[in-house]
Length: 443
Image (cartoon, rainbow, N blue to C red; front, top):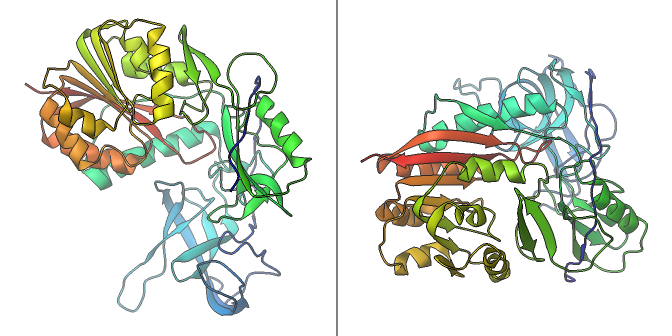
């Protein structure tokens, strides 16, 4: 695969989405990519049936004939990942198997096609009053968005329910306090996208649940400037496979090639080089900084998974000593550059994994520890090391409620108590959930 190239320029915010309720919705097969031809097979009972249909891909199988069962089910709720949970009719032993149906909403009656554990949505029989027309022509085929079929406000309500249910299911965490919700413009918010180029197909995103490329000419959740780049790529000839990253900063300017970007957040400037991570929602970067760092002060702060310093920079204004830890060498270089613009005295920068740093660190007390780990979360070993360090305050940022629940279970059992919980809708139209949890160690 060819190396990635970055194009960067200015930005804007288009608007999309209208309420509507179509009685029937058909989707191409997200299992094998072969569009369904003709009507769904019907049974004499009207709610289930089976048919043998040709299928040439998906599931690691070759061509052949597969037995496909058609059923009608009711969606009970959405689960982590955005799919609707439904239960099949009871079998001979009285068991009701659970299935997960994409692009559905709670309360909807739907017809599905099932082969083993794979489920494909065929038709919406009784749509939810919360269903709206999606704002993108590629929705249902593109793997990027899962929730365009309901409003931004309803998406936030669904994500809150998913968050609380997942925390209880994976960590036994029951939070009955306020979940502070933070949302902004639901369209045109992305300052970075990653595209795939394939000869004979074009440039676009992967299709849902596959590695097939879906060629696109625009993306409604990306900024206007990125869409200009997408349009240029759509008109270009593709001669080889490549992964392309298009990114914009919040400065006016033309297209750039592999140059560092500059982001201004809450009066601070951040350099972000290609290969370093920065929040992709250009409307909520300042909001997440405020949610995590506002009102905190003391002698010592420790920022794990610091990235380019999104949280470390404001912490330098409130703490006498700040330690920032980042394993990505590109991000660590930007981190060092960005912190140098504030102060260098009392600032320690470590370019290494968080667990390795805590194992070698002198056991000095910490007033505040901030951690923003990847989707895998802290994990048992790092969580145990944090508990041994015993920071008074611990602010944990998570992009996966399942691993967050696991980590919180360990922290709560070690004597920490949840003080605040923030739901940050950094990725509208998708099922991704970002959470910030503030914990305090009981003495």
